[in-house]
Length: 364
Image (cartoon, rainbow, N blue to C red; front, side, top):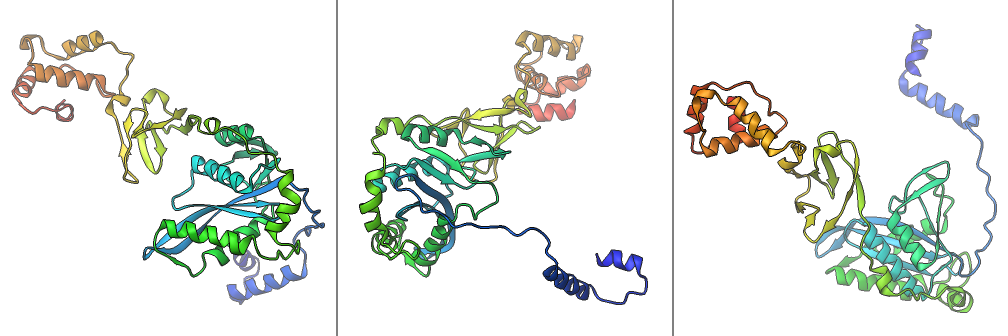
């Protein structure tokens, strides 16, 4: 804005800061948009709604080190009974579902619906209020028997109660605390829920959450009678987008896939210590590449051998086995097209005891 003013008025002698202050004063006088209208929130019906919100707190001292504590807050909308699931590693879908199971066990029942914000562990994307849900979470909700209700994106005021719950956990439960180990953190959280969070006099309901839950809401919850065998189903396969170099991202590492799947979406599944056909890597930022993924598997071995014969000069005779093997690997790669090779050069290469495909391609 200051630049355009100077272009129109050449004799304007004023600093950029003065212009910013003047514009700021104008914004306070002139409404820039329609104000949002609010209405009183009708108290929730017992046993209907549980609000869920993940959060994290950095700088928690555990065993003398600053750690990041990841947690999920569950609040029953009627009684305000609260449960907090805890994890010291970034949350994934499996742990997120386990926390739901822990919360329903703590509440001794299941609500009719759970309300979420636009967390990616539940809502993959939203377009005109059409939601694409995380299939594992949706399957769990269907199995347990509750509906998933997602708030509109980028509007935290819709949810309300749980946003205050996340701040309450950060400022009251963990603030200024030091812990010896992870077990001490969990014990402290359990004691805090029993003696503080659910025993206080709630400022809105003017009731104690635990007593309110026992008298009004507990009988309205659906029983949590889902067999554990239904909850421990095999995890669904996750998907990843393959980039133009045949790599996918998995837990901050890069893994190669067959080049036929470039720019496509593929299913990914980790079993034991392997990611499909890769050994799982423990180091962040590494790239794990299998050269076999960058070969054209539609070619037959006989076709490759004929291509090698076309490269070899006629007067050389039968090449040594090591050179033939290396040539076969070069021919199967993306840069396998070469002109006929000079016989003197190939004779010298056959005498090399440690010939590699990379070295051969450099000579060719």
